[in-house]
Length: 468
Image 1 (cartoon, rainbow, N blue to C red):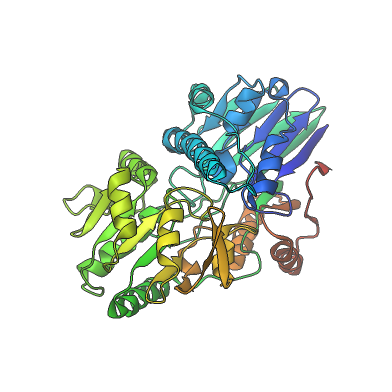
Image 2 (cartoon, rainbow, N blue to C red; image 1 turned 90 degrees about the horizontal axis):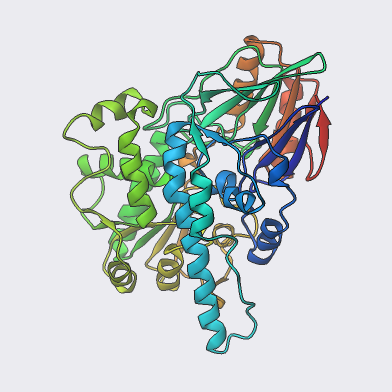
C-alpha cells in the first residue's frame, strides 16, 4: 500500500501538507500555515488533524511560511522526529519561524489593545505557538545537500534537487517501496522559473513515475523579467514626479532580495531617481545575511557579484531598518521614498502600518510583486476595493495599485508544462497530481497537460486520498 493524503494546499494555495503512507511508515511533505481571511485561516490552523506521534519523518521543500509555518504546531502535537531540509532552508527557517511567532504575539497584543479601547467587534486572539515551540522545532532539523540520497523511514528514501524558487528550495524526490510496489515521486514544493536573477534554474530529476506539482500559475503566463524591471522603473519615475511614496509589500524571503537586486541595477544605470530605499523588515535583514552564507545556491552572475566588492544587496541610498522607532519615522514621513516591507500578502508585520499611512493619498503607489491568496488584504488591494480594512478600521484606497507579476518566483503555465514534459523524457511519468493552486488555475493546467498527452491528471481536494 502506497497512498497520498492531501491535508492542505488542496484546491487552494496555502497550508501545504501532503502525507505519504505505506504499511510501514508515514512521512509528511511540508507543514505550512493556511493564510487568508483571518478567522477562517485561524480555525484551519488550530484544527490540526495530524498526530505528530504517528509520523516517521517530515520533508520540507522550502522555508516559505505557507510550507513551513505549521512545523511548531506539529511539535506541540507531539512530533519529535527529524525534519529534513536543505542546509539553506534549515538556516532560513530559524529567523522565519521565530519571526512568525513574534508576529503572532504582536498581533494578539495589538488586537487586545484595540479591544480594551472599545473595539468590541474584535475577538481576542491566542498565538498558535510561541518561541519555545519554535526552538524545539529547530532542534529537529537535519540538513541534506542537493543530490545526496538518504533513507528517512522504512522503505522510503529522499533526494533533493534544486527547485529554483527561493534560496534552498528543493524538488523532493521520494523513492518508496512497499509490498512489492515501487514509486519514484517528485514533489515540486514551489517550482521556480528559468533565467531569474540570483538563483539557478530548476533541475530535472530522472526516473520519476509520479509528479506532485504546484499549479499556482497554471492558467497564465509571466512577462519576461526584463520587461518587469522596465515597468518597475516606469512606476517609480511616475510616482516620483507626483512627489509620492512607493510601498512594496514583499515576502521577506527571496522576493525582497530580488527587488533589491533589481533596484540596484536601476540605480547603477541611473534609470530611477536617487530617493531613499528602506528595507523595513528585521526578518528581511536577517534573511539577506543568510543569503550571503549560501553562494552554492546562486547562479553565475550573482555568485560573481557576491565575491566582488559590488555586493548584489547594497547600493547608495539603500537602508536596512530594524528598530521600531526608525520604522515609525519612515511611516509618518511624507517625503518621496521606496519602502519594502513584509508580510508579502499584507496579513501581518510592519507593512500594515505603512499601508495604513499611505493608501489614502493619491500621490502614493502600492506595487504588488507577489501572489496574493484569496481573502488576504493583498488580494483586496489587487482587486482595488474602494475601502480596505487594516487593524479593524476601514480605510479609503486612493493610492495607485500596480501589479507586477513578472517578479513571481513560481513557474507559469509554460514552465509547468515544460517541467512535466522534461520529467517524462527522462523517465516513465505516469501520473500527475495538481496541488497548491486555485480551481480555475488547476482545471486550465489539467486541460493543457491532457493536450500534452498526460492521461492521468488528478486534482485532489482537502482530505482526499490517492493510491499510487
